[in-house]
Length: 139
Image (cartoon, rainbow, N blue to C red):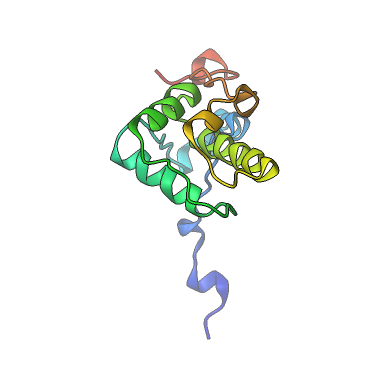
């Protein structure tokens, strides 16, 4: 049986920083690391069938007892607009709405519940390149 190192050489290790500006800065600020890794930026979510599918899958995985009516362009538009299309923020808002729905006994997420301001605390879309030296900012 081959060892782990033989089966997965170092060339196949892929670090993902997923929204962590400090990790991106660390990789890009060192010439050796910058030459070994490529930077791939995922585009933000926009209202459409892909975002709808993403939202549906997240909501289906939440421990809610009743189906949530999240099949709405308006709801997806709200999520895309208020989160800047950032995956982490979309997930957090849906999780907060689910917790509130469970605590209230409603057991589902709907448009009215999702619009509650408490769910959106700290969800301002991040500014592109914020926290990075000007020389490392993209765009």
